[in-house]
Amino acid sequence: MLDMIIKGARIVTPSGVGEWDLGLQGEKIVAVTLPGILPDEGARIIDATGKIVVPGGIEPHAHAAANVQPGARQLVQGTPNAGPIDHSLGAIWGGTTTVIDFAPVPNEGDLAQGIHDFIAPWLGNAYTDYSTHCIYRNSNTPDAISRYKELIDAGFPSVKIFTTDIRPPEGRVHSLTPIGRIDSGRLEDVMTQIARHGGVLAVHGEDDELLMYNYLLAQQRGHWDWYNVHMIHSKAVEDLAFRTVVRLAQRTGVGLYFVHVTASDGLDVISEARSLGMPVYGEVLTLALSFNCENYKEEDGMKYHTYPSLKYEDDRQHLWQGLLKNDLSFTATDSSFTTYLDKIAGRNVVDVRGGNIGIEIRMGVNYTEAVVKQGMSLERYADVTSTNAAKLLGLYPRKGAIMVGSDADIAIIDPSAKKNLSMDDLHVRDYSPWEGWEVEGWPTTVLLRGKVMVDNGQLLGSPNDGQLIPRKIDPAVLQRPAF
Ligand SMILES: [Zn+2]
Image 1: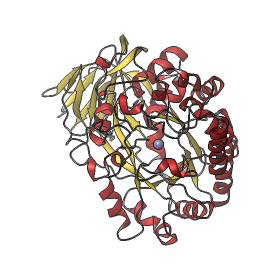
Image 2: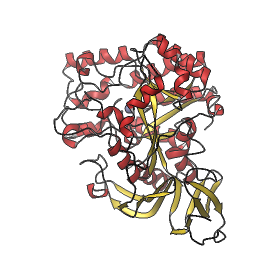
Image 3: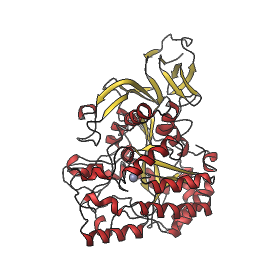
Image 4: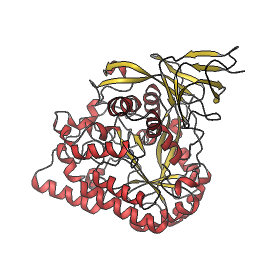
């Protein structure tokens, strides 16, 4: 007997889009059939006529647990950072059902336990399912790097590294816990381990030496206001770091995932590597598809910032081309937020706060901007909001697909929902860079493993519903650009 049937919608599956019925049992999708043939006795019927059913979004890039660790950076007292409960609440309202966080790898003891301890704030605070990338940095010993297999065996196959400290040392006094660059020696060692055991390397790629000199130049030339940050986190900074990392990846055979590509230069590096058959994938932030560095000049232009900075309009156009074609594989948020007051408190190039509040709007704004305005296919939309991230990060086919056997993680989009986004439409914190944006199409019903979490403006889920999901990457994804 089926627990639930979703009828009348266009269903976006890996084998095409069609007007089918969807049968759910427990936490799983058990049937995708022609309309009207599923036995409906005892089943709850969701009439989704005129709507579009897509796999629940995968947010591959959120900094949630770090924000609630002792010593987490905060500029204005009394404006608490957003932890897992705020991230997952925004996510579930916006149609995203799985969130991937970040946790630093310890040097001693049980490494996997160290990761579990760091993401413990998710327990009981998860409206979505979740997992975490593991961060290696310069404070890690060669011994901790050689023990990487323990992490992959524990279901955490993706590693994140930063090629830069992002801000000058004096600006990092209150930095978030896990940020810290990795040197080339450790990087090669980490890559070798990951390639050997079947993981993937997520890279924040900015050339540290070029970047830090740019800070010095900005200081000397009086370019110290926040709206100059793109001259420091420049196109050349991305170009150089991406090329170095790709070169080392070529030597070690590791699969790469460049997080938040911001410049046409970084995109070019990815395209070249992919054309050589290298397993290199790129992520783009909805932020970088929506705004450019001109927006920094607005009075509260700090709200558009996350690291690396936004670049120019030409870069924004190139990023769209990369996503519409195939060189960028999925969208993300770089979710990390606090209140508006705190976000705009940093007014110079060292203090300006990173992190973005877009986790709730990602699915809806991507639908409007990509599908409605630029004619992206519904299949490609599902790929770039869910499926591709699920594949690269080892969640597929449990997550990221409307398919028999997959978790019933589902976003039902109402394509007729038109509105100017106001804060009344949003559910976390007190500002959004997208306030006032016109949207057409919005997730109105959201299911997590078969449970209706959000339905027509009502929150029905609880923060105990989300679970930690163990991950394992299909080796085929790491042999060539598989998507
Ligand atoms: Zn980030």
